[in-house]
Image (tube, rainbow, N blue to C red; front, side, top):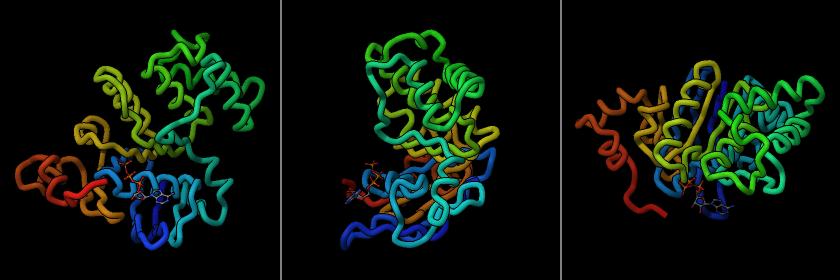
Length: 240
Ligand SMILES: Nc1ncnc2c1ncn2[C@@H]1O[C@H](COP(=O)(O)OP(=O)(O)OP(=O)(O)O)[C@@H](O)[C@H]1O
């Protein structure tokens, strides 16, 4: 599970994440929403150990990211906002390479690559060079690398960004399916994804949580049964 407690991050004089606390249990998919510049990516980078907080901590399966980053990172699958891919490699070779980086070899590596390919429906393009993939398949290849070690926790930064409606639908279904057993935190700008894939959502604005609940609870809070109305009410109009 993910336990975020009192995370705070300053960049110079600006506080971009402010005393943020929330938890994500196994079997939960938490949508992380907020306007541009609200602090979503900064929070995710701290939760995944790519950025140090000024104060606070994120525990992954009980392991502190601040005190034991290596062990905590081992429990996470992370899809960053712009995930790196090696264009010259085939999909299967790229995944083998990533699995080796995760310390897997031999049969365990083969099984991990097969699992990731199957889970992300990459069978058709497995022998294809990454440079020749459509955007949707590139995206799924990035997602596949985050699943190689079958992590208990998944952190996905805008996993459906730039995909066409069919691909968005497939990735949302995949997230919902993976979320049956894992703890998933995923950021999005698309409010429809809350209904399509999330068991719960938080909205942040200027680094603080301004709404938290199940999709039904959030709609009820809006007073008009609309997530769009709630989003507009609780977030500031000036975005970056
Ligand atoms: N390395 C950095 N140095 C200085 N300021 C930064 C840095 N990284 C992010 N910021 C600022 O922190 C704020 C929050 O940025 P962040 O990327 O976390 O927002 P976001 O909610 O993910 O936005 P978006 O939805 O546009 O991706 C912004 O004002 C951004 O300019």
